[in-house]
Structure formats: C-alpha cells, structure tokens
Image 1 (cartoon, helix red, strand yellow):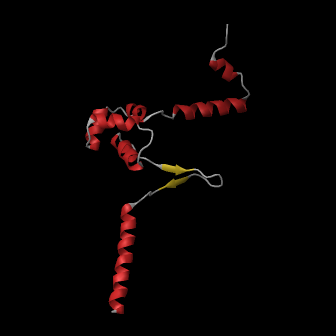
Image 2 (cartoon, rainbow, N blue to C red):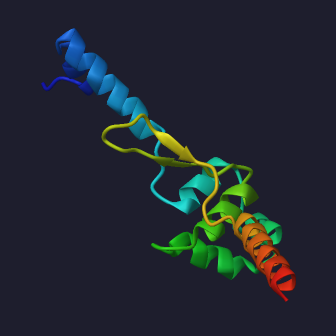
Image 3 (tube, one colour):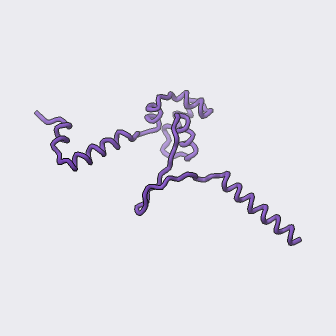
Length: 126
C-alpha cells in the first residue's frame, strides 16, 4: 500500500518540508479567476451587476475576459467588497506598491496649471 501525501511530506528534511508547506499556503491563497474570487467573496453575478450598474451578462463577460482595463478590474474588485493593489517586483528592490496609475485628475490639474502660466506670460508680453 502507498503512503499518503501527509506521510511523504512528514518524511522530508525539515528545511524542505518548511518550503513545501509555505508554497502550499501560497497556492491556497491564489485564485484562478474572477468568478472564483467573486464566489470566495460570497457574491452573485447579479449583485456585482447592480454595484457596477450593468446587466448580469456583462459581469459574466468581464469574468471571462483574459485582458481588461485596470479601471474595469478595480471596479469589479470594489464591487465584491475588495480593494485592488498593484505591486511591482523588481530584481533589485523590495516590492513597490503603485498608488496611482493614470491619475487623470492629477494630470489634468498639472495641464491646467501649465495652460494658466502660458496665458499669464502671453498677457504680460502683450
């Protein structure tokens, strides 16, 4: 008779067993899809649709997409009660969390300030 997985893991050297158990924990914390994430949050597609102000088939479409805007993903995650965080991992740095990506308001304000400065210079020159 064969050994169980628990017996095989228990027979490993301690350092390897710790690595195996840590990786198993990481895998338990991963989800394969948005629909799985939604189910873990205890939400139905119709609830997400109401929160996003779309129809249920649109939620189904979002969950099947392989590629989408970050704003769509952010809205979806917030609709299930979560918060989207973007973390960049570079080889020579600790993980970096992106706070703003494409912050339209910030760029619009900077653009408005530059425009006002140019107008002011044009008036002074005239």
